[in-house]
Amino acid sequence: MTEAFYPPRHLYYNGKVQMASGPVFRSIDPSTAQPLADIHAASHSDIDSAITSAQRAFPAWSRTPPVVRARILLKAVQLLRERNDEIAKSETQDTGKPFSETSTVDVVTGADVLEFFANLVAGGGLNGETAQLREDAWVYTKKESLGVCAGIGAWNYPIQIALWKSAPCLAAGNTMVYKPSEVTPLHGLILAQIYTEAGVPPGVFNIVNGGGDIGAYLTSHPGIAKVSFTGQVSTGKKVASSAAMNMKYVTMELGGKSPVVILPDADIDSAVDGAMMANFFSTGQVCTNGTRVFVPSALKQTFEMTLLEKMKHIRPGDLMDSNTNFGPLVSEVHYQKVLTYIKHGIEVDGAKLLYGGAEKPDSIKGMENGYWVKPTIFTDCKDSMKIVQEEIFGPVLTILSYESVEEAISRANATPLGLAAGVFTKDLNLAHQVVARLEAGITWVNTWGESPAEMSVGGWKESGVGVENGKRGLEAWVRIKSTLVDMSGVVPTVFAKI
Image 1 (cartoon, rainbow, N blue to C red):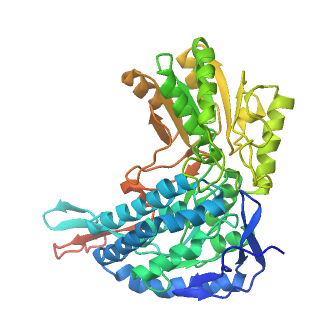
Image 2 (cartoon, one colour):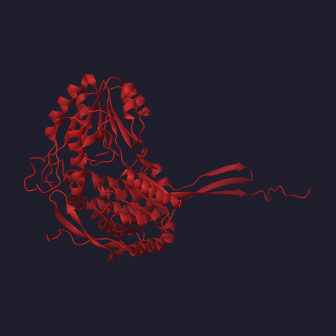
Image 3 (cartoon, rainbow, N blue to C red):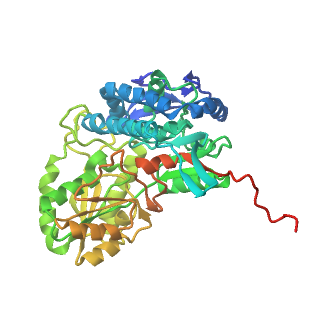
C-alpha cells in the first residue's frame, strides 16, 4: 500500500488529540489519486465524549465577556494569516484546488469572517434592547448562547466553511463539535490546534471525523442545541427533519442551479468573464455557481465567440504553479458523477457541445490518474434538459437563449432552488428591477461570486434555511430572552376583592 503523505488524523476534543475507535479511511489527493492521510473515524461513544467535553466547557465560555472572547479569536485570526500558505498547501492537496486559489481565497476569507464576528461581539453586537412601556414599567432583551452546536462541513471549501460556522458560534459564546467532510478532512485538526494555541479553552471547539452515519448521529444527539449544515439538498432535508424532531435550531446552506442573466445592453467581455467565474472557478464545485446562462438571441453568436476565445485562459496543470487556475474534481465518485452528466448532455439531452467534453485535459502530464475533466460548454440548451435542471457541481456551463427580459426572468425563476442569481447590464436601474424579481437569496450585479464577511448569505426555496455572515449571521447563534419589569409596586390582577 502506498505511504500516506500526512500523519494519521484522529479526533480532537477537550483541547487535545484523542484516539478514535472507529474505522480508518483515507484522504486522497484528487490531482494524482495518491493517498494523503489515514483518517480515524469516530465511533458513537467518541462523539458522546466530544459532546460531553463541549458541554463541560459551555458554562465558563458563555459567561466569558464578549470582549475577552474576541481577543482570543483575534489571536486565532493572526495565526491563520501567519500560516496562510502552509494551510493553503494542505487545502490544495486535499481538495485539488490550485494554490493560486487556496492561498488567496480559502484561508483569507475564513480568517476575515472570524475577524468580523470577533470585532462585532467586542463592539456590542450581542447587546439586547430596552423599551419603556410606561413610567413605571420597561422591557429588556438579552441575547443568550444556545449551548453545544454541531457543524457539518462540505468538501469544496473546507477551512473556509469550518470558519464560517465556528466563528459566529464561538463569538456568541457557544461551543461546537465539528465534523469535516470525509472527502476533505485534513483542515479539522489544523483549525482545532490553532484555536487552542490562540487560547480557546479545552472543549470549546472539537473535531470528529467520519462519514454520513457519524454526521447523522451527531446532529440527532440530544446534547446538540443547533445544527449548521452545508451540503446537498437531499442530505440537508434529512438533517433538518432530524433536527426538527427535537426542535433544534438549524442553519442550512444547500445547493443551487443559479441563473446568470445577460441583459441586451451588457458589455460582452464583462458578461463572459462573469459567466466563466460563475462556472469554472474551483472547477465548478461551488454551490452558488451560475450554470444557467441566459443570453439574448441577438447576442448569442457574439457571446459564444468571445467565450470560446477566453477559454484558452483556463490553465489546468501543476497545482502549486502560480499560473495554474483550474484543478481536478474532488474525488473519483464525484468525477464519475460529472462525467455521467456530460455524457447525458451529449447523448440524451442532445445539447450542442461547444467546448470540452468527457476527456481529460492535455496539460496534466504525470497526473493522468487524477480526477481531471475539461471545462465544458453546452449551447442550444432547453429548460427541460437534465443538464439544465439538475445541479451538476462541476465545470459545465449551459447557454440558453431568450427573446425578452420578461421571458428570461420567468425562466430563471423556474426552479425549486433559489440560492443565487446575477445580472450583467450597463443600465443599473434595470439591474435593480431585474434583481428584485429574481427568486434567490444571494444576487450580484455585474460581478459573480464575491461573498465578503459583511454580506449575509443564504438560500431561498429548497436552497436553505437561515443565513451565514453579516450582522444577521450572528443572530442565528443566539436565543432571545425577554424580561418585563414592573416597578409600580402593584401587581395587576383580575382576582381582586369586589
